[in-house]
Amino acid sequence: MKILKFGGTSVGSAERMREVANLIHNDEPKIVVLSAMSGTTNALVQIAEKLYLNLNEEANAQIDALHDTYKQVVAQLYTSENKQKQANELLNHHFEYLRAFTQDLFTVHEERAVLAQGELLSTALFQFFLEEQSINSVLLPALNFMKIDENEEPDVTYIEKNLAAELEKYTGTNLFITQGYICHNAFGDIDNLKRGGSDYSASLIGAAANASEIQIWTDIDGMHNNDPRIVKNTYPIAQLSFDEAAELAYFGAKILHPSSVLPAKQKNVPVRLLNTMQPEAKGTLISAESQGGSIKAVAAKDGITAIKIKSGRMLLAYGFLRSVFEVFERYKTPIDMITTSEVAVSLTIDNPKNLEAIVSELKTFGQVEVDHNQTIICVVGDFMAERTGASLKIFDALKDIPLRMISYGGSENNMSMLINASDKVTALTKLNDGIFERNTAHA
Image (cartoon, rainbow, N blue to C red):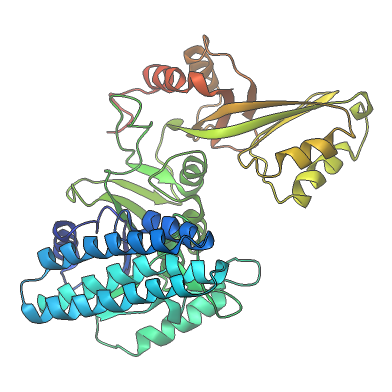
């Protein structure tokens, strides 16, 4: 069995849904995981914000506008009056549900239920279309088997057990449709896997089902060697290891959510990144194997804050770093990069929510300096394959870019540099020109 996940742009219109139906219409057993139609989750977030502020009239106006958008999709998607009627009744049910929140107290629990509506709508409308086309399929509610625990981590045992039970109900069926992103939490409430969670859903489902392959279908032909929105002449990478893909996803490659690599890696299920708009493109295969060659790709992570702690007490003082890390642990703030010297430690964070409190505590250790508007440039590859030469190419390409921090050696797959955000475009362009061998890198 294969798992096929289609993102918001892939199901973002009636035309796109028809193309997805064509892609999945064969006898191969599969579970199709759908995101909300593009723009829907953002609209639902805005509606929730208005409801929190008791701006119910404005929330109702936004609900009506979203309802109108979906009515247009229904009018374009179905040819039979019966299916149009059925789909519009479904829309009325969901949008009346949303309007009901303007009449009562709105909390975080209600917000999660609101955000779940996008996936519930896209999968139901898609299932109706498959029925109209006489394509045999089953709509498998993700809320029947997707669950997170008290720590908001996937309850893998529950998912495996309940997914198997759901599939057993439909022996002989080869095509299942389900929702990405949404789940129940440990208290039985509707919850979600956070933004980008449909990738995560697909990976968790693939691992639970011992799938032969997980396919992530988006609007780009695989993971590129650089950011195609910024740099010209990028190309898709044919093959990456799980570790290489995880590094790229975490450090800015938008095509894949960082969380989605781990479940597949743990069960050794290959992940293939494909393009809905160009289904014939080979895309990128992510597996336990790594293709030859050292430098594979470059990614950039924005919104970074750098913090330096200087202290004479640090010299030869065991326990100093532990004390520093405990500050970040108390405020649940992950650290991206770290470098140390005898009298200073520099590190970066991407979540400044508790920055003021963190800095206040760090000042008890010594002098603290904070730099905002930083960017991490991450170069990923198999650096074990070419211990000499790879770093020379990287630093030669960046010789005119001021480097705030360098991290190398903590991973065999990653060399990271911290730069000013204003130098990002120049750095990515120079790396693209200086480190990739176009005649062999993507052959």
